[in-house]
Length: 467
Image 1 (cartoon, helix red, strand yellow):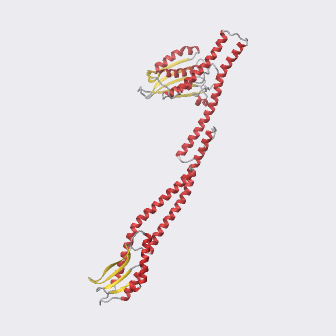
Image 2 (image 1 turned 90 degrees about the horizontal axis):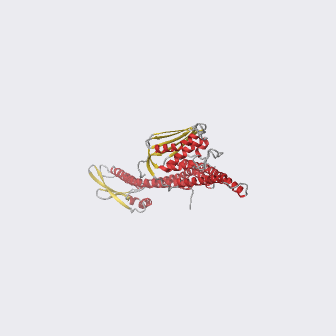
Image 3 (image 1 turned 120 degrees about the vertical axis):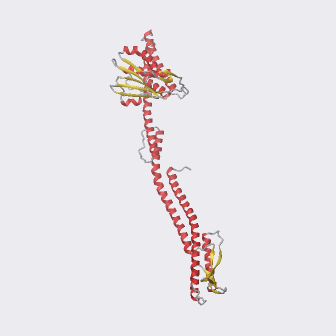
C-alpha cells in the first residue's frame, strides 16, 4: 500500500518522538534504579543507626534499661517497617517486636516482600535480621537485632515515587507523540502542498498544457529548486511547442513555393500552353536544386546533431583558414560594394578543419546576405589563455531582440517575409551551433536593430589529440 508524503512525514515525527521518549524512559529508569538502590541502602542504614543510637541512650548508669522508652522506640520502628529485638549483655530478651505484636510483624514482612516484588519481580528477597552491639562507653552492654526484607527495603513512599515518575514519563511521552503528530502534520502539509502542486503541473505538462505554472512559495531550498525547474521546463516546452508549430508552417512554406512553381510549370507544359524549351526546363531545374539543397541541409543537421558524430580533429592555424575563406568571398563582396576586413594573428587550434570551415563560411555568407551596399563586414581572430574567439561583425539592419533567442532554431528567420534573395533554408545557423557544440565550443550573437550584428565563435584550445 502506498501512502502520501504528508502521512509518512506525520507518522515519522510521531515515531521519532515515541522512540525518543522510550529511550529516555529506559535510560532514566536504568540510572535511576542504580542510584535509587544506593539511596535505599543508605536510608536503611541511617534508620538502623538512628534506632541503635536511640536504644543505646536507654541504658542507665545503674545498669538498668528504660523499658518504657525502649518499647516506644520499638513500636515506632515497627511502624517504619523495622522489626527489632533488644537483648542485654547476657543474651536475655529485653524487648521483642514479634512478642509485642507478632501479627503486625508478619503483615510488615509480607508488605515488604510485596513492595520489592512489584518493582523487581525476578528478585529473590528474604527476611534477614542483622545484629548490632550496644555499647556504653567502651563496654558492650547489650545487642539489638534489626529485621528487614532484603537485599533492600522499599517503603510505600519509595515505591510511590518510582511509580509517579514512570507515570509522568508515560504522560510526557503521550503528550509528545500527540504534539509531534499535530506539528508533523502542519510541517508535512507545508512541505507536501507545493510538491502536490508540482505533480499537478507536471501532469498538465504531460497532457500538453504548458501554460500552467507553480506559484506556491516555500522556504525549503530543494522545493524552490523543484518548482523553479518545473516552471522553467513548462516555459521551455511552451516555447518549443510554439517553435514546433512554426517549424511545421515554415517547412510547408519552404516546400510549397518550389513545388507550386514546378506544378504550374509542368501543368502548363502538359497542357501545351508552354513549350518544354530549355528556359522552362532550367527554371524547373532551379526549383528542384532548391528543394534538394534544403533536404541536404536537413541531412547534414541530423548528422551533426547525432551523438555518434565523428570529428576528424587536426592541429591547424585557424587564421590562415579564415584568410583563405575571405579571399574566396572577396569577389562577391566587391560586386555588392561591401568592404570585407580581416584581422587576426596566427592561432593554432585542434579541431575538424572541414567542419570549422563550414561554420565560418555560413557566418560570412549570412553577413554578405544581410549587409546592404556600402556596408562593412569585419572578421577577427583573438586568442585567450584557453579559447580562441572568432568574430564576424556587420553593420546590417540587425536582428530584433525578440528574435535573438530563436535564431539558431531550425527554419527560423527573423525575416518574416522570407525574401528569396536574402533568406536561405533557415538551417545554416542551426548547423553552425551543432558543429560548435560538437567541438565543446560556444556560439553567441549580439545585435541591435539598425546597428548591425556580431557572431562570436569560441573554440577551446585542445592540445592533446587524444581528447
